[in-house]
Each structure stands twice: as structure tokens, then as C-alpha cells.
Image 1 (cartoon, rainbow, N blue to C red):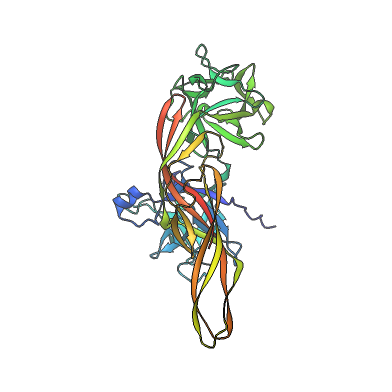
Image 2: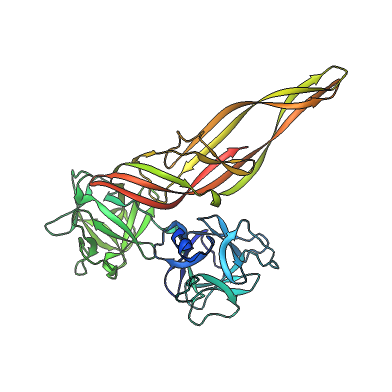
Length: 462
């Protein structure tokens, strides 16, 4: 009996077996340094939640055994360029396997558990990490050989992007059933659930750091040390100075729970046990998720401002252009014996909606203000900037606008006839990558953080 087909997540991060780095789109700094075009891909990323490292797998319509791989940062599909380089450059999926620009790839299980090989369908070549030390193409990906690579440069993991819990920078934890915040106890360095602690107290604040394949390291703001499982009794202390992350007792795998909102469970990598509340302290001693392991996450932010928004217009993805119907107007009647040029006045209503979103998988209610710029929207199948919604859009929310317009159309009306004018109406959606600077007022001061890229979704009728 044949082995069941592997079902891949929709959104993935692709990790190399050879160097344990993640595949990502080239950065602006690398473009300036190497003069390579902005469609190149490198296996160099260390941060698994980088927006540059997010890819979408789309099953091919004509060949369900193949997928198209879309780079979510620039909305382009991976294709073979220049005979062997694999770049995120195709605007649309191409399923003709005879064309050099075919975007279909076949992902098959490798002979090492958990790893896969990616083969370009048209060329039948494996996708391989390129090793050319000191050259500008070093660590790009190529498809130029039909044989497997002996150094495992053609082996990759497909990690589920949607399984990662992406935290804000500073959070506090409390038990799911009450508001007793988990606080650093300076007498014994343990983490203790304490009554009547204010979220502004620095002993309850924790800085969150993504580590490896979706793990986190947690540093208490007050002690300035990382959380650690004490091996002798499994209590969690905030006393580690280890900056390398080599100590598994300082690594935690967060699992997001759907109910209640913003609830997680933390599994310690040192003993693979979940952290639970026990005797008002935190202890990694539970094999499965229970009520006592549920931790409510709160963001330690008073307010936030979004500034310096830059829309990446060249990387806009226009999709779902749907014809709604025809708006019909009875225009003008010419009862005379001669043709006449006449004006038809029409009225119409334009609907627009826009959504700005962060990469955080946990959603909080900190007040957010945005310094607005004109927002991209769809017009005649193209992207145009508009200020219609600029003073209305809120962070992590969808805002809608409808504006009434009047216009005159000049037409020639034949003698003794009536003219009816109809306008086709479409509804379109576009995803617009953008970057911005976020200024947050924290309980311990202010921080200014540049964000690489997020996605704004704009819907418009045109």
C-alpha cells in the first residue's frame, strides 16, 4: 500500500538542513551590496517569524501533486530564472510544464524523517542551497541538478507559520481564572502569582524573544534575567544569564489556546512538561494542558503610535476582481430631426474598506494612533493612492467608507432616438505590503521599533 500523501500547511517557513537557516527574500541592504535584483532568495534568516520568511503553498489546479510557492512579502511566485536560479519573480502561477518559467514544484519526502526535497517540475531539478563562499550568490537557491545532494543541501523542513505564537515585546502573565499577575520574587528568584500587583509593576513585566523553530526565551524586566527551569524541582526562576540559548531549560514552546482570548500554555524544552500554577508559584510539571497550565497574556503597553508608513506599491497583489453587474442609467432622448451632442449626468456611490494588521497572533487593546498617508486602492485594475480613508483607519480593525459622486458623460444622440448608458462595476481586493515605525509608551518608558513589513488589505469597487 502506498504511503498517504503528505498534507502541508498553507503558510510555511522553509528551513535548510545544511545550515539550519530559513529561506527568505533578499533585503534592501543586500540588494545595495550585491546589486542582485529584488527577487532573489537567500537561506540566511535567523528569525523564524520574519515577514521575509513567510511563504504560501498553493496546490496546482492541473497537477494536484505539485504546488506553487508564493513569497508573501512581495506577492510573487517562485520560478526558475536564468537557467538555474530560483527567484520570487512570477506575477501569476504558470502550470505549463513545458515553459521555462513554470512555477510548479513537487515536494517529496527525503530519506531523513521530517525533511523534504523540492523539485522544479519543468526542469526536473532539485532546489539546492548554493555554496559559493565569498561570492554574491552564496546561500541563494538554485535548481540545476537532477541528482540528490550528498551534503543535504537539498533537504528542507516545512514549518507551519500559523503554529507560531508571536508575542508583543513586553507582556505580563496571570492565571486564566484570576488577575493575579506572575511576579518576580527577589528573595528566591521564583515566579509567583501575587494578589493586587499592578501591571505597571516592573516585576510582572517580561520581554519576549523568539528562539529557534518557534520557541521563546523570556526575560523578566525587574531581574533582567531569563526564565529557567531548575532541574532539581522544576520550579521556574528568573535567574539565568545564559545569552546563547544553549540551555534547554531556558526555552519554552508557547501553544496558543482559543478560549479565552490571549491564553497560552508554555512547555519547557528541558523536560517537555507544561508550566502550571502550583502553590502560587510556576512549575514545569504537567504532561498535558489543563486549567492550571492556562496563562492569560496581557500587553504591558499604555499606548502606541504608528509612524512613517511606507507602502510597497511595486509589490501589491491585486486579486478577486469580481464583476458585480451593470449600473444602468436612462440617459437622454433626442426628439429632433438632427443628431445632437448631449450631456448625461450620472450619480454613483463608491465603497472602500481597508484593514491594517500586525504580525502578532495575540490581540490586545492598547490605544493605537496612526499618522496617516494616502492609502493605496484599486482603480481600473491598477493601484492608486487615495486619502478617502486616511483619517478613519484604525489598527487591527476594518474601516469602510462610501462616497457619492456625480459625473457628466458627453454622448452623441441620433435624431428621434433615446440613449441608455450602462457602466460595468467590479469589486476588487489588493494586499499591500508596508513598513512602519512603531513608538510605544511602556510602563517603564518609551521604545521606538522599526517593523520590516506587514500587509494592509484594501477592498474597493471600481
